[in-house]
Amino acid sequence: MSSVEELLKSHGLTRDEVLKWGKEKYPTLIGNEALLVKLYLVTHGVKLPMAVPRGRMKKITELKEREPSVVNVVVVQQVAKSRYFGCPSCYIKLDALGGETECPRCGTVVQPKELFWSRYLVGDSSGEIIMSLSPSSGVSDRDLPEGAMVEAYGSLRENGEFLARRLVVHSQPIQMVEVGPKPIVEEVKEVEKVEEIVEEGKVEEKVEEKLEKPAVLPEEVVSATPLEFVPTDVMVKYVKVGGMLRKNADEFFKLFKEKFPEAANEEMFKVVLQKAGCKIQDGKVVLSL
Image (cartoon, rainbow, N blue to C red):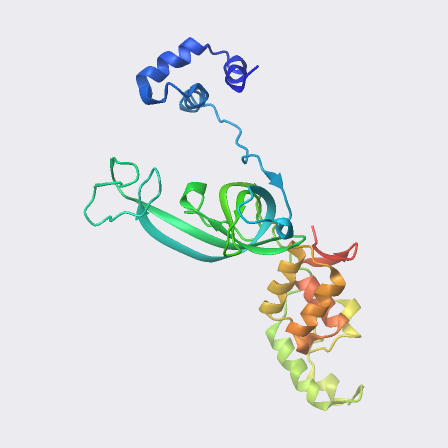
């Protein structure tokens, strides 16, 4: 049974009924019965299940130039977005100053439409890549949320970017839960003052007088982590992205030490992991659910 017959049967329709409707509404599309059936259903309130076009499922590192592929990736962040006015049908750039104009590609008079190209840093377990969304993707005008899992159909371009022609958002970003108490600015300042009188692990008796309140830190890191250490926003975001991409823990710790030498010990790294809502699981940095 063809896909057209399956659609008709599943919704209790007849071919003649749809063709009659199509001749009145879309006479130029009579040759495409499958499209007419879908249009008929949509205009009558039926939501059609959508899927990314077929293509070989690949990891980022397996992509080859111009080979149609499907990738499952996480959105790290948007890196660029450009706007222009073009043909609503073929998306070629047009002059919008004069209102309606003839599209040189379609050969018809159209009203130029505001269109967008968007570029995102995305990644999977194998690596990262820049993904470009063209106007034909249908979502380039909207901003994809950071952390969203998407399935994209497209191909690798010569410039090393993945051009996505169709896109399906599988899940929204996971809400990050901050682990442990929020840093208290006043207490941190007091701890910084105490640092001046700490020598070779011995604390003078004046410390107790200077600290009106103890610094609030997780019990497991108080003894081994310098009291003044507070992860920066850059550290937290860096580790959070590593958790989204499920990086190898040992390799990621080495990268972390190179990028943040001021926090290059395991106890400090654990503090940043907690702050970013991440943990080590099966040898990988992952998000804590």
